[in-house]
Image 1 (tube, rainbow, N blue to C red):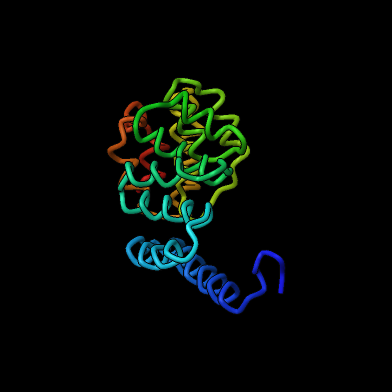
Image 2: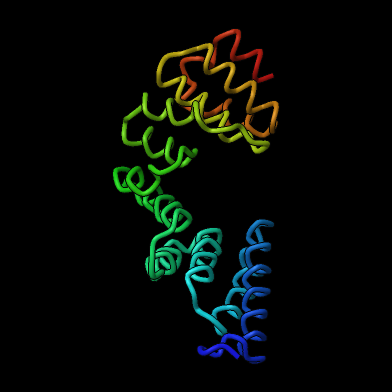
Length: 196
């Protein structure tokens, strides 16, 4: 038996259950099932209220739209992690605190960092950030690249970004057709062709 009791049956059992519940909670988060995630994470929290559990609870609350609870979970962690900073940066964007968001998100190029940069008016920085972000099947990064291109008056960038976004997910066409970011292109032949 270890000096701190870490090898006792009770400790090992509680540790296993905590890890299982936290992993179940994390898996539900990946599936977009915030309520199910929170149930599993509450069980993990009852056994061991550590930073991993708090971080995952923060993202579950964020997914549910409970910004206040998410902020409390992230801020209650004993040490900030890249994940908790990402969560707090996302909250800062939601609250219109773009400078704070950029500071929290500046460690890694992400779509959220580019969005915060764009919203605070740093369009060129937003473009540089998005140039380092890989496209994903959701199409959101490609769509944001098109928005940034529109703000930079780069028609080719708009068309290429939208074409890529639509290739990943056709739902972006509905957004583009009414998105005022692209208003100056609504009557453009290339825009009309790509949004058909």
